[in-house]
Each structure stands twice: as structure tokens, then as C-alpha cells.
Image (cartoon, rainbow, N blue to C red; front, top):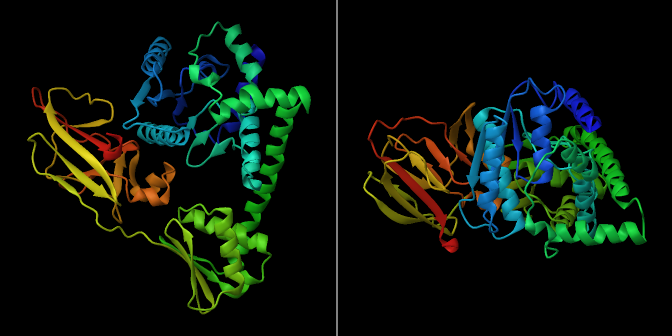
Length: 453
């Protein structure tokens, strides 16, 4: 299967200088066929000897045997001399969506910690076909038909997106590569499995023999159209005199009302997205109508704390970020204890104690030489966290981690006595500061959702 390895080399060459800028590459590995092949290609493929590879594995804890998969991945990386970061979900994940969000948040935190250009995942052409079909039956728009992009900001890369599952499987057999089988992949109660195992094979057997390839071609055509729209967007925004700020965006009412309703909808969705809110089709229609007929002084709620209002000849999208009834938690010293914190109406249980080890339990944070008092609270304006490559605004970190805007006020932070953010559970840890002295106990802290207890 040198052909697949050669093709992968072409993908790397095309990505050099754009997606890849010479830094490390984080490779996401579950232990399954696709990700095992991806890691093998990076480690042993043609023209990959110079690459700085770092593997990352996230245990969702959604099924029995997941710990064994993580241990297998660790053994594989040790044998291949590839550094590995592994993490266990810090709270119970009860849906595919929550698992996906937690996984991507973890992968992004690893990318930042090692200073990597990208996180490479093993999504391939069959995954693309399944994604497009899944979105079609749910009534997606043009952007949804585009499926998965080969690259997505801030650093997610899918280098196998043009490769088919049969090619990947053939490569694994040709090099004698083993992998872990996830038993849930055969459970058709999950929508993705039903599409993969039943619906698409039936479509190809009874309706269109090339259904998968047609769906991938549809995604490619939709991507071209989305790229065309993106190229036109700056010109539209210029005609609207758009003024963007941290929590609000304003633009010209008359200029907006003259645009085609479809264009108005695209613009409103994009401006809302920049404020961290995804508008539904129904909310978009409300905004489009408002943009052409609203009287000055009137407003409409668009969900997620977002309001569209007209004042004279300006329309303004404003995001409400205030929190009510928050209750912070103060940890005054190293004496063991526990307590609760309420953030945006959501309650968390906090437990802390001294231990002799610097290795935390899954879902906990180990803190040598803490600067008291410590505080568990929600994000505040101006908060930043120091990662391996420098400091990052908490607002950007949560946006990159795909935490929905309504949930950001419910995300707990651990802050030390100097005001430095140390830990964003499930998302990021600050770069190490203090070091534990010999025989000095280390403070271990756990933060869990009270509803998951």
C-alpha cells in the first residue's frame, strides 16, 4: 500500500507553509483503525521523518473497556517513541454531542500546551459522506451541505478527508497494523451507526450505487459556494458601515433593508456567529424581517442572550453577558475541605485535599505551592490564562473550545490569590508555575457538576 503512503506525502507537501508552519503536530488517536493508521503514516510514512509528532487520547468514559483502549494507545505510543497526552472525562458524558465537545476541547488544550500548528484527526471520505447525509435528512442549509472542511480554525486538520475507508483498511493490513474495535460502532441506536451500517449500504444497493461518492461531490460543490460567499462578505460589510465591539455589533439600517432577504440572513448569521451565537432558521427569519421593517426603538430577542434592536438609522446586535445569583467559593488555606459554587444557576461541588503525589486523579487538578486564597468562580472581563505558548483570553479559549455562549457563564475557573487563572476544568490548565518541594504535600482539587453526582 505504498500508494496510500505516497498520496499522504502529497497531502503533507501541499499543507506545508499553510496548514503546517514547521511546528509540532498533535495527532488525535482513539485506538481505532482510522486513527491508528493516521498515527502510523505520520510516524513511518514517506517524507515524515522530520515531523515533531505528539499523540493525544481522550477517554470519554461512555462505555466499559475504554480504560483498556487508553492503555493500549499508551503502549503503542511508547513502542513508536511518540509522546502521548491522555485524559479522562472529568464528568459523566451522556450524549454523543457532549462527548464530541469535550474531546475537541481537550485536543485544543493539548495543541496549545505543546505549541502545535494543528491537531490532526482521522476523518476520511466515508465520514464525509455520512456527515452530509445526516445533515440532509435534518434539513440543513448550504453551509451544512459543505460537510467537514479539511481545515478549521483555530487548528483542526483532517488530512485523510480525500481517502476512503477501504484504502485505509488496506494500508493497515499491508503493514501488519493492529487496532482496537469499539463495540459501540455496531450499535445502530446511534444515528451515525445507522447511517453507516444500514442506510448508506441500502441506498447503494437499491437507489444509487455511487451514493457515497455523490455525497462527497455534493460537499465539494457546497464548499465552493460557501467560499464564494465568504469572498463577497467583506464588501457587503463595508456597505453596511459595520462597527464590531466585544459584546455588540451595529450596522446601517437602510443599507441592510435594500439587500436581498437571503443576503440579509447570511449577514445576520455571520455577525451573530462572531458574537458567539448560532442563530436557528426561525430566529434568522425573524431577524431578516426585522432588518427591513422595524421601527426605531424596537427590538427582537434572537435567543442565547442576543438582541437585535433599531435605534434611528442603526441596527445593533447586543449580547447580554450579565450573570445573576452567582456564588463563588473561597479556599483560604491548605486544610482539606469541600463546598459548592453556583455559576449561572448551575451548581458545582468542589473538593480539595493534600496528597503526597503530583499526579492528579482523573478530572482533578494538582497544585504545588498554591498562592492562597484560591477562588472558584465564573469568567470575568479581561480574564486570561497562561498556556505553554503565552497568555490567551478566556473568551477566545471558550470560543475555540466550542462552548456555547449560554454555557460560558456556567464554566468554573480556578483562580489563585494573584488573580491568575490556573484551571478551566475539561478545557485547559495553566502552564506549570510553582514546583513541589521534596516531601511537600500537593493540593488536589476536584470540581464536578452537582447534577452528575
